[in-house]
Length: 361
Image 1 (cartoon, rainbow, N blue to C red):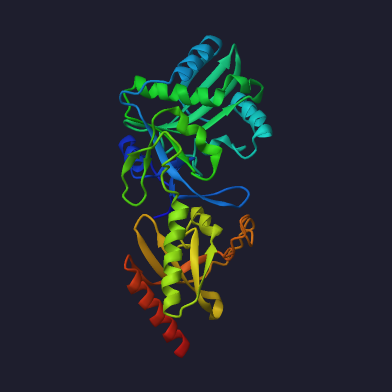
Image 2 (tube, one colour):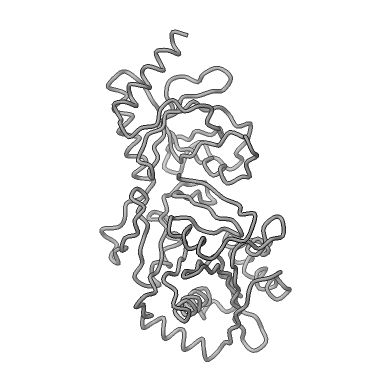
C-alpha cells in the first residue's frame, strides 16, 4: 500500500507504535500514515524511503559530541509530556514560520491532539532555554523501545547554534539513556535533498519497500538505494512496451492527486487511486470513466482498474511537471478492479480482452 492514513480513536499502546514504525508507517500529528512518494510544495513528485538510526552500540560522531558539549554549556533543557501549546511555544513557532513557512504550521496543537481533542500517541516535548528565554523545542513520539521525531522548531536568531540538529541529538541521547533500540527521523528522498541532513546523524538503515526488510544504508553516495518513483516508472514503461506489441496504445501520466488519499474517507466511500503514476489506456469511457494501469511497488503487482472522477478539484496540480512530463489532472476513485497480478503477460491479455469487449459493446 503506497499511500494510506489511519486516525486512531483511542490511545495507541507503545508496542503498537513500535510495530507500525517497523512496518514502514510513521506519525503525522496524532495519526499514522505511510507513503512511498512525496509531493512537494512546487507540485513535483519524488520517491521517499523510511530511515532509522540503530541505537544499540551507537556512538555520536565527534562533531556531534562537540555540539552537545558547547550547547550544553550555553543552554538548559527540559523534558515533559506534551500538552496544550503555551504562549512561549507559540511565539518561537511564529518566529520560525517567518523564515520557514513550509517547515511548520501555525496550529502546534496538530502535533499534540487529534480533531477530537485526544492525544492517542505518546507525544513528548523538549524545550531549550537560554536563561529564561525559550529558543527551541521539539516534539517526538515514544513507543516501547523506539522513538520518532516529528517537529523541531527554533528561534532563527539562534540559527548559528544549530538548534534543529541539537534537539535531534538530545532526542537520541534520551533514547540511549532509556536503552531504546531505534530512533526514527522519518524519511528522506533520493532526488529531493531537503531531508539529506537526517542521514548525517549516524549509520542509518532504510526500509526496502518490496521486501519490507530494513537494510544498512550506504554511507557513500553510490550505490544509493533505488528511488521508489524510478522503480515505479520502470515497471510502467515495461508494461507500455508490452501493450504496444499487441497493438494497445497507452499514455504515461504522473498522478499528483494520489495525495488525496490522506483526506478523511466516509464509511462506504470508494477509495481514491493509490498510485503516483499511471498508464492511461484507450479512450475515455462514458461518464468520465477511464481504464488505467498502475504498479504497486510493495505488492510487486500491476493493477488494471476502471476509475471514475472523484468529484474533487486538485487546485495545486500542474498540467506538466518541471521536466515536461504530462499529468493526469483529474482526481479519481477506483470503480472496479479488472485484474491485479505480477504476471505481465496475463495483465496485457486482460487489457486486450477488456478493450476488445468495450469496443464491441
